[in-house]
Length: 318
Ligand code: TXA
Ligand code: MG
Image (cartoon, rainbow, N blue to C red):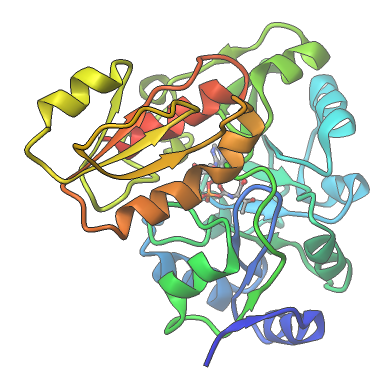
């Protein structure tokens, strides 16, 4: 029987009984549980086979709620919250003592966001606690952007996926930490860096080696298909190199035809980066099902969401 359902009251009941529910957000589906239930939180880590050193994002219903979770809000964090919430920005701030250490992997900071999805906002407003929710995929595999993707991963492990359709943005939130009051990007994501700079000025991106293990979303191998995957700026050369293999390609808008290609996904015929982000993970899920020898992904333009997509593709190829 399918675990996919649109029944919010069922989701509320399960979460109130310390069970997990997969929830839709504008970025990817999350595997959610009550942040104050040790049982639920342990079950998130077990279900995902996620190492305990990797902290979770706390999802709250409103900006006012933030002061219940964090000790201190820097001025630029307020600006970002006002500009982008509800939406795909996660702020890493000094946590209140009441936030359980298992959520934050013993750090003194906590990651928080307000998701921009009407069903999940309604759900949060019907609960007396916030929801911890990592992406609803086994550790290091491709993130889910439809209820079906989640069911394929976890139908034997969880009781319900709240069906909110396909995630509109399609890649995870942008994670921002604060160092001496100044924002720093820990993970590129659905909110383009240029939009963030319009609000808070020039912002630094800290790569994995500088911040590890601050944001293991920055782990080198992550978001990865099972099929060997490479990223290239020279598609025809890469295709030639693997011409004796079963090749799948993932391209931005190119309509290149080549007999050597077994399966092809075009992310946006009109070269629209938002459309490409929306389709990215579903494309990887599809390619991974084709029994290919290799997936050749083409690098996208390196600005706006293209930068965030390239970041995910790089990690998919490690
Ligand atoms: O869009 C999203 O952010 C989705 C949806 C479901 O909200 N969630 C998501 O969660 O991507 P997850 O667990 O797959 O990625 C959360 C990232 C991890 O890389 C984690 O290390 C980082 O957030 N993180 C969490 N707490 C942190 C903290 N206190 N300091 C630094 N990084 C933190
Ligand atoms: Mg994830």
